[in-house]
Amino acid sequence: MRIGIDVGGTNTDAALLADDDRVLAAAKSPTTADVTSGVGAAIRALDPPTDQITAVMIGTTHFLNALIEGARLAPVAAVRLGLPATAALPPMTDWPERQRAAVGGHAYLCHGGREFDGRPLSPLDPDELRRTAADIAARGLTSVAISSVFSPVAEEDERRAAEILAAELGPDVRFSLSHEIGRVGLLARENATIVNAALRDLADHIVESFGKALAEASITAPFFLSQNDGTLMDVAYARTYPVATFASGPTNSMRGAAFLSGLADCAVVDVGGTTADVGILAGGFPREAAGESEAAGIRTNFRIPDVLSLGIGGGSLVAQDGETGPRSVGYRLTEEALVFGGPTLTATDLAVAAGRAEVGDRDRVAHLDRAFAERALARIAERLAETVDRMRTSAAPLPVVAVGGGSILVPEALPGFDDVRRPAHFGVANAVGAAIAQVGGEVDRVFHVPEGRREAVLAEAREEATGRALDAGAKDGTVRIVDIEEVPLAYLPGGATRIRVKAVGDLDLTRIQHAATTGAPTHA
Image 1 (cartoon, rainbow, N blue to C red):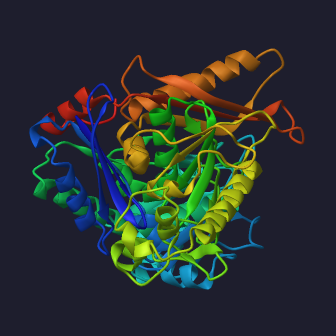
Image 2: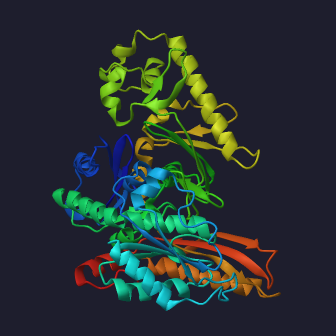
Image 3: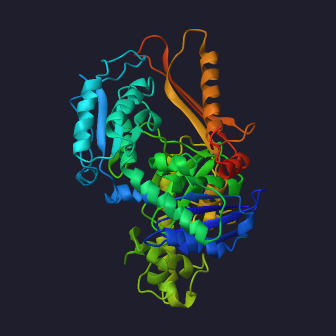
């Protein structure tokens, strides 16, 4: 058996799955301020047979929340290789002031970097890097983010710069390299790398806290964190790349919706306590956002699902005119909502008053005018339908799968969308999505595609993506290619084409468990 856990803004959801993917048990526990105690409570509510648990998969909002709050972030030395170019916009130029201050705003511009085809932009200057290291040491910085122009094409400069800086700074300093984190596009990739470096210390704490929560529940099985592309990462990877967890919650919900509904292509409306997240599934995986995305006002370009959020959830406040959201009682729903004996009229109260749900004490909302509740719920349905309509890319009929505890707000049909489904265990779809997550590998860089060699180049990219999935812990023989994207760069010579290939496979628990018991490397 395995356990999936998803830590949301309102609830921490957990699901127990058998090896054949049957959902054996599900539980919800209010998310706590320290988050990890809520994880422990959710596991205890499942009452799992601890000796039969082979793995635990966790989706968490810890790292994104830390960035949004501008708290618990480590100071970072942001080293960019690109002089004499790129000096017009130094690192963190467009960051919100709170986040910039939290990481210290320490930026260093050095020579190096490449052209799109791998040719040197300017030679790396070891002496310049040693002077940079001296200043970093003088400031007491222990986390370094290195970015280089076109490093996804040629990573050598970033690796060499890290070697030079590490020799000067010693073993206690940790490095985040942009070619391992973001995609082509310097500023957004650099931003993602700086954020990752700022979260490294917190990642150690969070991973240890999760391990402690599982140990207190007598679970000794290995645990994994879910990434924002619907795949898993092991503990060592999570410590190194915490930024990869961003938006894993909506991704888990969408993957869980696909699994529970049996639909590989649909729209998913995930309604929690605070927001409704709407996304599109293609081939069982969330459609990824094109180009750049934004986290806490910071532009990034790592893989992230294309999700549109609406300020409507089960805990949303209801105004006198029936307008609902965006303000919400959040995780205090069970204390504040009328049906739970609280003083606040919420969207959940509307659903109970209209007879759509059996939650809490219905007698406590008997005084509500049913026509008022129906009008407010109809307006919610209209706004949800508008959001789904904005997300779809064709006029073809599109089934809608409603999941999340707040999906009691979604009617059996939405305006313009007659096929609305609410599968079994819809309330813990996010935890189910975490439990069924697979292991992935991705290639995204500029290839030279000579005339007549397209298929050979694509085969090379597929093989590389498959190899990365296997290295990440996928079971041999289960890896498949789920997405291929080609973008010819017409303004560049030599048949330059940006190719992105994504491969996924089932988690090889036998290899993971062998590594845990023998100390062998986790990766192939």
